[in-house]
Each structure stands twice: as C-alpha cells, then as structure tokens.
Image 1 (cartoon, one colour):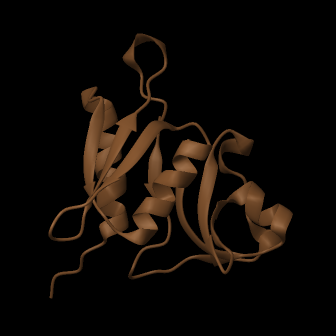
Image 2 (cartoon, one colour; image 1 turned 120 degrees about the vertical axis):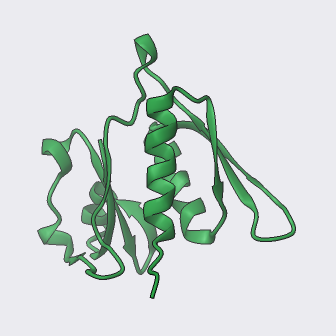
Length: 132
C-alpha cells in the first residue's frame, strides 16, 4: 500500500526550488498547505503566494525569496510529524528551533501558527515542520 504525505511533498518542492534558484514554484492546493504558506509569508521566508483555481484542486504558486548571492531565505525545512508518527507538544514543552533562529509550524485548535505564537496563546498541538 502506498503512503503519501502531501505536506512533505510541498516542503520538498519548496526546498528543491530554492536550491535550483527558481523564482516561483507550483504546489497542488489544499487548505492546510495554503495556511502553511501564509505562515511562511508572515514570517518572511517567502515573497508571496497566490491560489490559482483549476478544474481539479487548484494550485498554490509560491514566489521564493532569496538573500544576497542567490542563497535562498529558507536554509532548511524539515517535516517533524509524519503520517506514521505524529508528534504533539503542549505549549510549555515546545522547543525553539536553532535557539530561536528558526520557527516550528504548529497545527493547533486555533489554526496554524508558529511556535512563539502558540506559546503566547498557551495552546499546544501537532508540530508539522521546522523552518530555518
């Protein structure tokens, strides 16, 4: 039986697009992916994103952001919670990524947010990925 992980596929598309120096990448659309790219834009890891309607499920077009010398803003992006092994944390047990230099994207009962926002709101949830 084949197991698919659409969130891991999205993270891989963004990671590979940055390494290849692409200006934008297209990701198959879903609500959770749209919320994840919204958090990435709020935190300054990507330039912009746009949801494009099509007859199937839509496409999320992500404009990647680069620092000087063509280095991508996202140095690393890693899936934490997987379909086979979910990772949950209470708000007081959420650890900072690279001593606060990166972020964790957490799925909480109040929506997707960063680790800092989850600690402020005192809500825990599923740790989807780490970005630095």
